Length: 523
Image 1: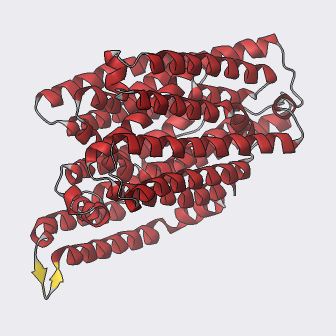
Image 2: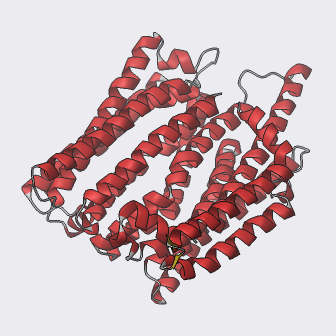
Image 3: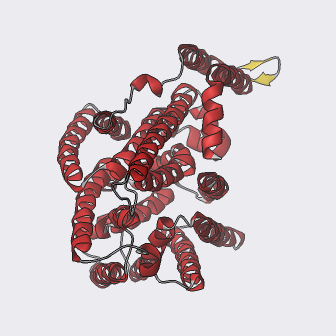
């Protein structure tokens, strides 16, 4: 039920965000303004990585959170944001900072300070968010983040539409202030919402998360070691997953960033819509299954551990198979309809850029991300500190491979496509590592994990690849044609819909038992 509720929330909130982004993109007169939003968003992600946001979440969901952890997080955040706001805001002439944030005047420095303030306000309640996740209070997250996302979308749309109604030209400063206002609204709602829940619960973080547990120096030391292991691991993961975006900042124009941002937001819609909540809930679920608290060596507790291990294996197989279905859907149907989708959503001007071709490649990348996300969530939940250190070394190797492939493809003149393809290679390397880890983990505990358990049946695969061949071969002949007075692209969409329903009809026929089990398990 928690997963079902969280997915329902993300369906509504992310669709709202998506349609808001479409409206904003149509309001912008030039792609380079979209590139400015992209640059500011990257800076926010960089601050989250620098302070160890993901490491904090992963570590304290596993160990629980104490008052000292609240204090540590607040001190780290305060020191970092004071440095950013005072130093970078006062020294815009530094070439690297100016190139990254495009600071050029007093107004831009004011925008930057308010932007840093919004980041700080959001991160300040991160310990309370972790506490709610540890206690499985997912309904709290649904209400608070739902309100925050709605406020963020409405504020940005309202600001830009008011400027259009006043016949004010939308320039760089306009889009900057609209973005900052929306971030302040989002952060303010999160801050007030989580504080209200924390106060209304009537229990402190330490009482909630460490109930019936003895908390002493040994646990705190192991918690610190685990945090550092997660932190190093997340730095490498950040470089590998987000590195191509920061490469765009240094080596591309604002227009190229804007085109990539539109492709990324459209292509990663399902990532934010489905994959992210599934990975977060799965990680929390696996932590509880694989690291149960207050267990003794009695026969009853040993049997309970075995049952939880079997449940963890079933849950992993089910999620990986679901991700495989989604990956095949994107890879087989996405490339044939990228141009049509851009023309309908963003207009002919965007359809005539390189965005549709980037979207075709990105559809394949989304499928690979689906498999990597779930497998990596399990590795992070099951791994020890020593295993994470080993993974960090492999991440170094993957970084070298990523940079080598990216450099080679860029040298061959492939441009922005090189970033996506090199990231596909990076993700495949990580999937291979995760698969080896999972196989060994369950093998050492007397269970078997096989690749064929997560693959669809042969007839289903045949339908997927047959649909790919039919839809792709008819794309160009039908794009600009008219048959019986009907635009060719409408016929192309109709053929795609027929292939889609045929494929999923075969999927239901062949995999109906699996789908019933999955439905009953997810509630």
